[in-house]
Image 1 (cartoon, rainbow, N blue to C red):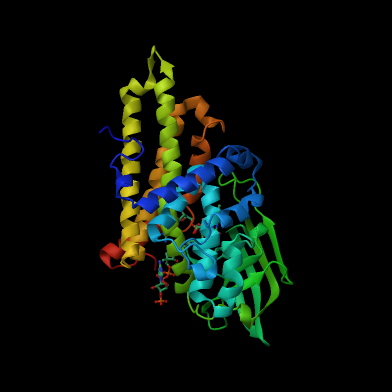
Image 2 (spheres, protein in one colour; image 1 turned 30 degrees about the vertical axis):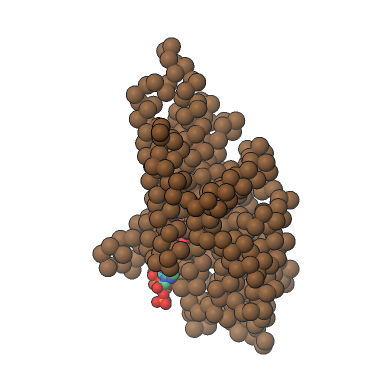
Length: 389
Ligand code: TGC
Ligand code: FAD
């Protein structure tokens, strides 16, 4: 049987029947609702918020969480397949789902009270409410423990002061999960509603990456948050980092979608583009690039699938997620760059997908922990020595 260039090592055959079915369903949905418009949205710099409830109806938000809270309760591989299908259209679309599900819903599910779960999770799963996750600050990105946002006890609740920057969905969110240090320097989590007095927010303009995703800042000036909006089970940096494990796992899968779209486009282009009387696909230099792309993509798929099976077995370690996020995000970026170069001049236009994915993947390589940060996390796992302090 000839190899499938988009699945060189036939990882697809290792999916279960319902996982394959889900893959087809979500791809079809993405094709019908996003794919034909995504370049225009990207160019305009907007996310199609009218489609958010459709994502909810399809069961794509926080899909791995229990049905009791309105979610789909799919397994880890199916969750990954959803992320892959969304990012096949655009990293911004997968980002939306990652933040809503992997970060916001997970924070409430893992660290919230029963009341908080019952109030928020069904609405977030249905896409009736939008969430954002505020960890990063102007002077605390890779080192979130350096955060300056504070939470001091006051009456029946807390008062928040500080700033969060680079927050996906912040300008459109109904609810922000916000991380702040208490008077003892411990990191706590809070659910801050968009209409809270003293909360202001704005969009970050002029992004040249993730243009089909809204990114913004949150400013807290004496924002009062009642105790019932305090996450009772979050007591340290471990809490937001646990949410990041879930979102980083989603990126391991999502980046495959963007990479696959780029390889497919480059292959088709190379077969029909003639230079010096022959298709460029017949040239050794172009084949070398295509083979490298197929090799990276094959390796990315096997890595994601193995992580999924480890997660199913309850044996997945955060350091494994780190190495896989580092690898898959960077390899997807390299694939997109190679695809762009094969398309040459045509590759710089939004008529093709490569440059949009390439520019988006610069962010994917950066957020949820940069390539360097994941190098050092994996380095610590290998050597037992932390290079952070
Ligand atoms: P460190 O001392 O290592 O750890 C503090 C506590 O946390 C525990 N821990 C983890 N727990 C769960 N999962 C993990 N991955 C964990 N890593 C560490 C650790 O055991 C410890 O627990 P305890 O109980 O002993 O207190 O902390 P550190 O200050 O040295 O931090 C180092 C480092 C690099 C691990 C961490 O700060 C880091 O990961 N930095 C990168 C920051 C990051 O990824 N930010 C992402 C922001 S959100 C985002 O980008 C969303 S984009 C969304 C989208 O649009 O898709
Ligand atoms: P810095 O931490 O300032 O790093 C600068 C450079 O130094 C990097 O190259 C880094 O790798 C390197 N570096 C840092 N520390 C070390 C070290 N110890 N050793 C060696 N090199 C090091 N955050 C949220 O909380 N929520 C969100 O929803 C969110 N969405 C985002 C959306 C977009 C589009 C973007 C671009 C970012 C988003 N982020 C979000 C923020 C993101 O997580 C941070 O940008 C990221 O963690 C890196 O932080 P930084 O940009 O401050 O870089």
